[in-house]
View 1 (cartoon, rainbow, N blue to C red):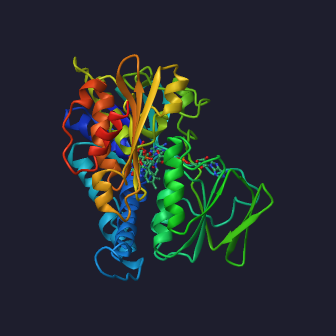
View 2 (tube, rainbow, N blue to C red):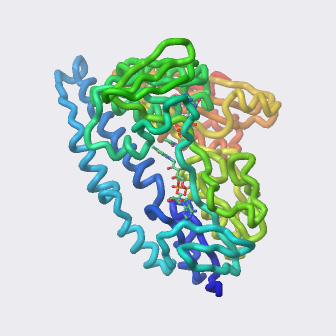
View 3 (tube, helix red, strand yellow):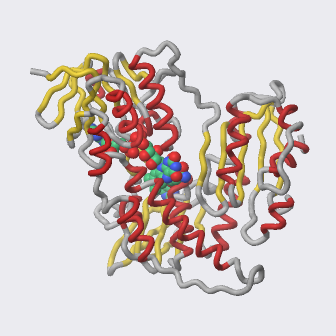
Length: 452
Ligand SMILES: Cc1cc2nc3c(=O)[nH]c(=O)nc-3n(C[C@H](O)[C@H](O)[C@H](O)COP(=O)(O)OP(=O)(O)OC[C@H]3O[C@@H](n4cnc5c(N)ncnc54)[C@H](O)[C@@H]3O)c2cc1C
Ligand SMILES: NC(=O)c1ccc[n+]([C@@H]2O[C@H](COP(=O)([O-])OP(=O)(O)OC[C@H]3O[C@@H](n4cnc5c(N)ncnc54)[C@H](O)[C@@H]3O)[C@@H](O)[C@H]2O)c1
């Protein structure tokens, strides 16, 4: 006999945890399911520990910038305090008791079980059956996509999990994939003295961003000592004698102690029972509408929706689902036209909305403008580590920004102003008349606007 509840949330990563807690606090009876840790990737193997690693790597880089600007300084990188901080402060040694208590404290019934949808409103988990009168939220995230490279399966390669859990660093590492995970971790490892080679199959790193971002990322990471193999694919992997050898399709090979596979993520629909409610995974993600509804009485939020795999997207969609499920008259509708994203390399590469290429592909009347951070007043003052730029993508016919990139020492923070402009479609004319504080990094936005 099925247990009657209001909502079942399958997957308690950042999206599911937020939705389950809010719905329970609103008075609904909510069952939350996750066989792993409440909080998901972001706090345990993603955003938070990786940003702690980046903070440590950036401290090393800043110390090395003292020479010639503020005296002399030497730094002896040591991974031990970083690993300790991740273990003790970020992840509680990968123990989610605090998160479970917080969730249960909000009134959610938590089961450390995987959920399977068995029919409309019906979910089975750990031998129990639930019937959800309001519906089901699918928030099961993604898993690393492991490419079918000869010899790779069965080797002790790293994904983000092993990289984040590492107590010690290897002498050398090959990073397969020059996306956000690959570049952020590559730079950290290099700053701690690891010999890093990044292998990227596309013709540039950060291939979804502006080509100027790709060039900048490669240039600064090369200064950190990283070797790039761009436009080549791994054909075979061999692991012998404690070392990996990756054979590339141009005939070359690279060897290192460790191999990190960071070639993207995939939705894992196995055992989830999506067929039972007519959800098709042939597009490799769960399609949702503006209410983040995926099927009758089924909502999907977060990485499973394929709308930008970011914590802020999962939280945003959770909010949309919560309002919709509660039947609020003023429920927000999801819109992704001002999707912000930041690659936390040093310099940070922030972007919002459309790239120039994507804007042109949409047939917009595109105009672009750029300014360089090193030639802005603040960039010039900053000197060491001042690489970066502002790029604006304008829809000329509407006179508004539809996209922008902000790369620089605080690129992710400067992005805030550009995100407001794209989100609210602030007229370019109005942005040009604003006062930009002197001498700030964000003043370079004004420099770029003058080029239009
Ligand atoms: C190294 C790294 C760094 C990152 N850095 C950033 C960053 O700086 N900023 C940013 O915005 N994003 C970052 N991300 C991305 C971010 O972590 C994800 O976008 C976010 O975690 C997605 O949340 P989610 O709730 O959709 O899924 P997840 O966090 O993946 O959680 C999904 C949960 O569902 C559970 N689950 C799966 N199947 C089932 C089932 N059948 N039944 C029950 N539960 C199930 C899983 O165990 C998991 O706990 C990073 C990711 C990585 C890997
Ligand atoms: N700062 C952030 O917000 C942040 C940080 C890390 C991760 N993330 C999220 O996590 C997701 C996953 O990150 P990711 O870096 O794994 O994926 P990604 O899709 O960003 O990059 C994967 C890269 O691997 C390359 N690639 C694919 N197959 C390959 C192969 N066989 N050989 C060599 N290269 C190959 C792709 O061309 C691509 O450039 C991202 O989409 C991002 O949204 C966000």
